[in-house]
Length: 289
Image (cartoon, rainbow, N blue to C red; front, side, top):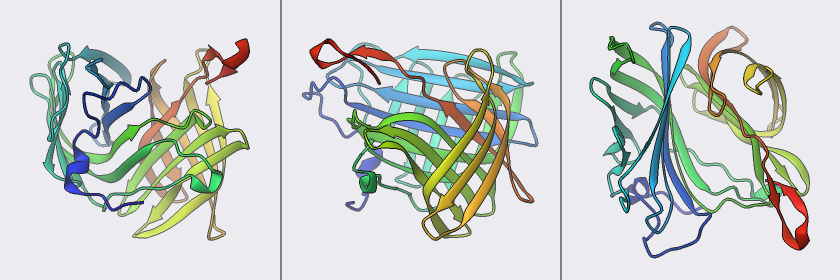
């Protein structure tokens, strides 16, 4: 992979590109376990002026409030980030620090505690698109729907992705979390022509263990929302890890805020299901995407 540069924090697509499946997104999620508050923020843009959309999910008092906002027609992200409605993610220090403004009273700063992280699925002959991510800390203030202002000092995860995902590699479910102190993980499961494959890693104080196999034991409710997970991962350096998770609250079409345990360590993060959609394929045959 080519080395990341400062401008990779900005948009990667010219407005003249009309490729319909091309997408770019900026995402930040964080959790403050002591305050019992967490959030996921996402801004996604499509090419050729087809719009920018922001989505946010806020966990407070055991419940989730969700919001969808769209940018004015023709609005495009600039070199410092992206915004739609009242939600904006901005670059403070390229590849290292970002700010989030989400309406009156919500002002947060994310600071990465790691260098940017990327992993490839080329070994499975599938590329789900370009991206990078990091884990770090979040500080600032959050105002909930009831007008209450809360000081935040928590752990966070940032991800920036772009491109046209390989249609033969469909994302089934994904999970990531952090325990602090340099211990964090991210694992995704894809369905490919060769079968189900996993991609991701577990990092422990600067030592990275690439995931070779994963078993997602996910419990769901009648609406398909995750309620818990028993994640078993086997790494390329022949190590096994078992991560247990209890979902505090989950959105029907969004993330599940989750409390994780790995041995004696306790942390938090997000699990998300990516449901199948039936589409009409070539020669009139239906296929799952």
